[in-house]
Amino acid sequence: MCKLLPIIQKLSPISSGEWAKAKALFLDRSYQADEIIFSAGDRPEGVYFLTKGIGRYFYIDSEGRERNKSLVKAGGAFASISSVVNGEQSPFYTQAITPCDVMVINYGDLIRLSEENKNWATFVRRLYENLVLKKERREADFLMLSARQRYEGFLAEFGADSDLIPLRHVAMYLGITDVTLSRIRREMAMT
Image: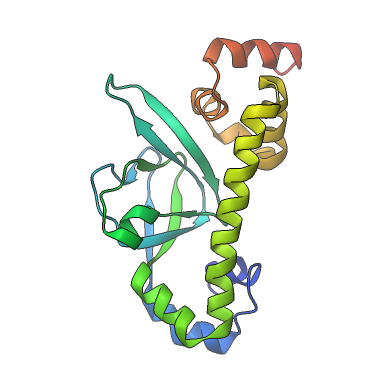
């Protein structure tokens, strides 16, 4: 069985038959650690479902500093919504932090599936719902939680996989400096 089907079935009851009709639309791709999946300025037309590994979304500011927008683990996805919906250039980069396997589908094909099949429509709707919920939680975390609480939340979300993510990426994701993260880790007896 494909590694993607169980991920899809967590959001919608896609049957084996429905998957069999759709699987030719998905392409397998692999990325090495630190490899860029797509860059700011690109117009990626696909949704990249992560079946193995950890990656990140990030911006590079006018002074060349990186800022992590989001971290993604297996079960998540990479996409530039402004690119797939409006044909605009991606405003951010995506990168594999660890070796990653993805299955990519053209966004137009995914929408066609959702227009032809109720279960695929449910899947797409839940993808967007989960994206909005994640953004809502992240915003609340930045406004309501201390840096230590945000780090504790990160550890809870990523579990054992948190050890695979370089601390500089974790600090960027949490919106704190490397020094602050080191202090928090010392206080938590993690270093």
